[in-house]
Length: 428
Ligand SMILES: Cc1ncc(COP(=O)(O)O)c(C=O)c1O
Image 1 (cartoon, rainbow, N blue to C red):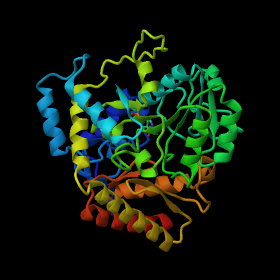
Image 2: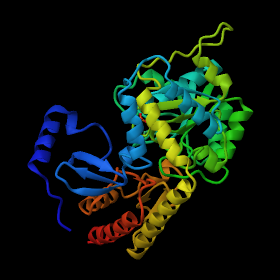
Image 3: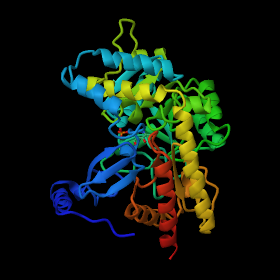
Image 4: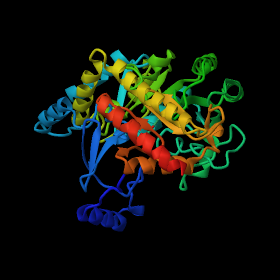
């Protein structure tokens, strides 16, 4: 397959990116040597006009594909009414109502603009609710870019549990005392940490499927039991899984209801909106109270922005249609099975990990249970594989295939032949 052609326009844009953006990048974990011009359904085009099947989906938001006509129509109509008011708008209220109907743990909803903010505010809320400071998170768990979330998300030299290591420079050292780290899918160690620290714990935050690693049978149930036993609120970070794994998210798919969750990506249809949702007794802390309930301040210029809210409502309307999730899972499973078969035929030590709407290959022969079990995976190999795939018209981020409801037979077949050819090239 020929290398992609790069037009003068794209080269010039990349030169400007190098001049004006640190590292020529917007900071995201996807290749930065191409500039995307647009997308439609399951495909995107770069500035040079090369076409790709898109498995990045904007890092997840475009669950119903790019430029969905119903979302475009709803947004276009709202644009002429003004784009933000700061005060309440009807669309955000209707979106909150829809979230409460859909998501098992949701009794009340508070909007923010990004996943990073949503997890940050969820953690602030449980600290106010409990009157304690410590947050327990899982090693390898990703909760955005706030200082708490960026503890032991990708430690190169993990410490003994529950000690955290900051993933970024610029995080105050003092915060390390407020974060405990546990191993995902290890309920014994996690329970022991919760039991030992419960007097100081504000809450536990977990991705119900950590990155692409599914919860082991009984893990989420065990976590629910132990947090309930010690009255420690459990937060599911469903920024990725919300409305993707089922209409009610991972909590519906896995049948475990947390006290709170965070939502983003799909719920905003590609616009900047996120949400914290949860039980009324915790969520009421977001409202000033005459009764002495500790108040959690959470103002935001774009909270519940009307454009994002109509995009979210239009997206959810599409997702509610009969058969949507069945088709999404059927497509994802076809892809997962084909990739598993091709890797087996190529005799590569590799596993396809995740759920149908979101998965990737991990080059390892160990059992995959948590962050430490994939520390010695062959990461350069996956990067090379991704690069070979991009040359073959497949665009994805570093560590995930996101499948949309618009990926169909043509995309599946084209992807399988790209995988075949890329695996042959990878083998040499
Ligand atoms: C599980 C999870 N939580 C939080 C975030 C942060 O969301 P955002 O990038 O909107 O800040 C992400 C982003 O990918 C995520 O995957």
